Each structure stands twice: as structure tokens, then as C-alpha cells.
Length: 438
Image (cartoon, helix red, strand yellow):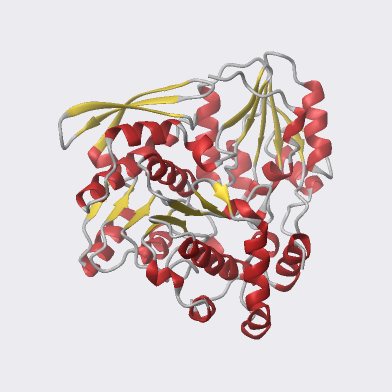
């Protein structure tokens, strides 16, 4: 098979949550374990870090990977979903898995796929583990896909577990309260394995403490160790000053991830580094500084308050649930512009009305839909938005919406493209002028 034929097979034969929704999910880890067993259980021979959470787990995964790379470790990184290229999901030292590796893995286990009938995600998880073992990675950063307890990645026993935050997302699958969702995320906490929770939240923190106590796992809350004192966001960097309650000293860090919400994610990552050092990992202060400052260059991270152009200001953000949109709104309140233009598309199984309720009424909207079955039709999104006082037009394709919006923005305006990973992923980045180098 060619690479494209391989992708066509994977997409056509294996149910994919990002395209069709809950029908793609399996209710236990049986298929993942069967596939892993066929591959020789590569995950049992890897050192890993496991990351879950409603928002921030992708950014935190990439931060940790970048820091490990800066410290000289050969670092695997498994994340999902991808924006533009399937191979974004599986990286070693920032380099995507080669096309031939994807072809070989699929051909090797193709008949087993037809027998086991795994999901797309189950296949990609085992593909990642096998590739990381083949590449002899020193460490692999593994991001959960959905939840934690029953997530396909949850066959590993990591060096450390990290849970970023809890919000109301995928409530039809994970539960309709923060505590129920926290219970699912807490499923990645393993016996005697340290766990870091980035943010203290009333309700979820009790769930995490109880699970950690039951597993005899040391637990640390990142925001209890490092309290954010000051943040300053530029077009290409974010400076964060913390007070470290353990040392009673001030700490300042700079990252190339410019969203203000990264301060909370970074507090969790830094606590994870504290613990990993105690476990013997050689991560210097210089490696932390370099790694945080070069996350995008080291790992290829895209779509987190990503500035594509400075004049007019063009920003991508994959925030797609209520908490994610709150973070975007906070960022907008700290950003200067004349007129706000928003290209937005959402998937139909999100709580769309809660998100729309947060959006500013003084913006002009370009309602659109990604080319996936789960996408909420742009006309329906427009109708729901109008009921909330939002004004704009609907477009049947992301390309049409972005081109119309870009033709209308002036030099001191802001164009925000958001609402869905899939909307951001479909944008032709080539039409924008890249920001000036640092």
C-alpha cells in the first residue's frame, strides 16, 4: 500500500471518534491489550509520563516533551487529534513518524484489525508504542484521548501521572458533574506512581485525593506549589512570575506559548519536573528554561492561541468547550484591537449553547463547518448564535469562511479562528503573512 492508501484504509475500516463520535468508542481496554499483545507489549518496555485533563493536556504534553528534549533525552510524544497530518500524533524529538512506518505497521497487523475490529484510536496508540520502542526513546509523553480510566492509553504504568484540569466536556460519555468527570480522569493514577494535578478545584480535588490515597500515590497540586503572581503576554512569548510556596522564592519563566491560560498548565509541568528530578531524571534549570522557550520549535505544537500574523492580528485557538472558550475570552480582554472578526465552527455533540453564550456580541461572525460527519451545520450554528445576539453569515466550507473574513479585516483588527480542532486544521495557513522572527 502507498501511504495514502494506508490512511484511506485506516479511516474507512476503523471507527474514528473525531469523525463519527461516541459510536467509535470501546467500553474497555480489551482491544488495546489484544493489539499490544500482538505487537509484543511494547508499552511494558517504555518509560512514560501519562497526561489527562479536560483542557491543557495537549499543551502540557508538548511542554514536557520540549523540556526532556532540551535535557538531551530522546523523547517520544503521542497526542491527538491531529490538525493537518495524521503523523502529528506520533513524534520522536519533534519529528513525525515516517510514512513508511505507518504503512509497515498497518500491513503487519491488517488481518488482525479485521478480526479484532479495533477503533482508529486503539490502533494509533499501539502504533505509537511500537514505534517508540523501535526508536529506543528514553521517555515517552502519552496524552489520553478521552477520559482516562477506559482510555486506550491506560495500559501503561508511567513514571508520573499529570492531570491538568476538569471541565464539563463529553458529559454524555464521562458524566454530567465535575466529580464524575474527575473520577474518569483519576483512572490514570496508578499504584505508588506520583501524580500532579495542575489546578485545585473544589470537588475534583477530593476525588483525586481519594484515588491517590487508595493507590498510595503521592499527590501534588501545581497551583498550591506555585501561585501565579504576574503574567505578561507578547505576540510571541508569555512571561509568568510565580511564588514558590516550598522555597518561599519568586520564579520567572518564559514560554513561546502565548495564551494566558498556559500559566496554570506550566505550574503543573514545573511540579512534574520537581518530582521527576527526585526520581533521578537529569533535568537542569537551563533545560527547563530552554524547553519552555522553544515548545513550538521542538514539538510542532499548533493551535493554542497561535498567532499566524501580526497586522492584522490573526489567531488560531482549538478551544472548543465552555472552559476553553472562557480562556479565549479572557485572552481577548487582554488583547488590543479595533474590530473583532471570529470564524467559528463546532461539532454537534458539544454543548454549543453554553459556548455561544460566552461569545462577545460586538464581534462579526463567520459561521462554518468542518468536513466531518460530526460537524454542526453552519446554518444551524448561525441560527443558534443569532438567538444569543451574535451577528454574522454562514459558510458551508472553512475555506470560504476564512477567505471572506480575511478579505474584510483591516490592519488594526483581530481575526480569531476557533471552535473546533477540525476547523483550525482545515485552514490554509499559506494565505497569512508569518510574524516577524524574535
